[in-house]
Length: 205
Image 1 (cartoon, rainbow, N blue to C red):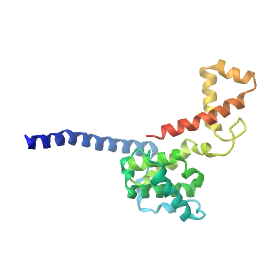
Image 2: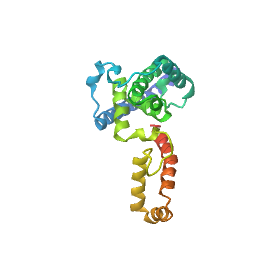
Image 3: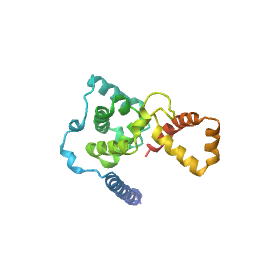
Image 4: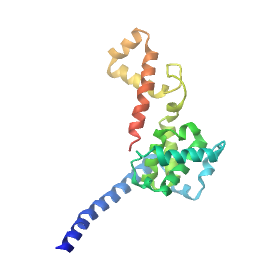
């Protein structure tokens, strides 16, 4: 009876564990194929792909490490309970900062994106590739420009224009209301407020 009681949970949990492993493999394959990731980068130091150097890199590392250790308990992946895995995530974020700026690499949405990429792909190089590909393909830089968005301001102009075009097609009466009262800039400012909240939500992968 005792041995049966002990073994029964093992019989239940083993298939669940295998299912989770298989699901992770499928996710890894989907990410790799969709983003055309290359494994041959694995032997190259991440610094080789950095376009710039960071001013006072040690200070930036300490600040980012503090954020990962204390201010982002909401990272969904259990692996980041380990300081080793948080260290790997730190290296990916530092490399992104060297390419796109400190302001970008410290953003919660970018941290969440890189955390998910690293947890799924299990490689700093592939996670870096994935994050940079997504950053470029979906023009994520527009989310990190300073200032208000408008029809003349590049911040969120690309995605706001996509929403505006879709609104004109699907709900022309709403678009006409903005245009009739010369309030297109108000629409772009509303998008500047709403779109970043959607970005953060979808990064919770």
